[in-house]
Amino acid sequence: MRNSPLSDDKNAGPPSNGPHSQTTTSHLPAAVRTLLDAADERHTACGTGTMIWRCWGQGRPLVLLHGGSGSWTHWLRNIEALAASGRQVWAPDLPGFGDSAPPSGGNDADAAAEPLAHGIRELMGEGPHEIVAFSFGSLISVLMAAQYPALVARMMLIGLPIVPLPQGRGVVLQSLRDAVTPEQRAAAHRANLAALMIHNADRIDDDTVALQAANVVRDRMRGRRLVTTDACARAVEKLRCEFHCVYGEQDVLYRDRWPQMRAACEASPNCKGFTLIEDAGHWVQYEQAQACNALLTAWARS
Image (cartoon, rainbow, N blue to C red; front, side, top):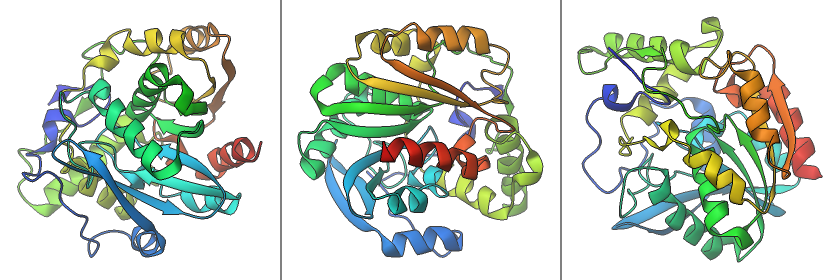
């Protein structure tokens, strides 16, 4: 066992060997297969391979960026609601996650900003564009927006690590390296979801475990350390666009620091909201999808 700030990290087992490994759908929940069947898939350059984008709906583009040890499926319970709100929803696998190749020049959030910006420009034009980003994806988003200010109009940032997360945050995760059987691996994934991602363990069903299992094994960005620095806060200081911060009220990473978190976000004149969603942990848009979708769709329509 070890402590980890934002992901299963080195507990996850060996990463996939190729530049990216395409999703096989037979073991995934039916809701994933349904969305994949309805998606328009596009590829943009990333490292020595490509970054995979999936798109649903029509209207003004809206980009969804997932969290660490994740993929586009971090938005499984939000995509349809946002597409139904009249937006064209783009949900990529970020560089080094899911089906996307790792970026060149590093394995942390700063290395992902350039290929993400390139993909947005190629698929959606120069912008500015609107972004909803979760956890590690929110760090990538603010780094990109600080580096390419003309590209981003506004952002909804869920679980933004604006206050550095110290190493050994107290979130103890089970190692998957010692889990030999499928049952042992499923039990470890379930335990790690309860420890870090989901507040109410009763909400972790077999489909949620299957999502976690499919995502963690394809995480090739294992050097994520910028969340333990002030890189996020420094990038937020440079932002020219408006942003809104959202957290699950019971997020184990932040729940004993809400005054500090609120002060850090609201220190920026561009912060236009700080929202805590009740009875939710870190993966708030999944655990409390109805409440989060109400907030996201109202923001998307505004």
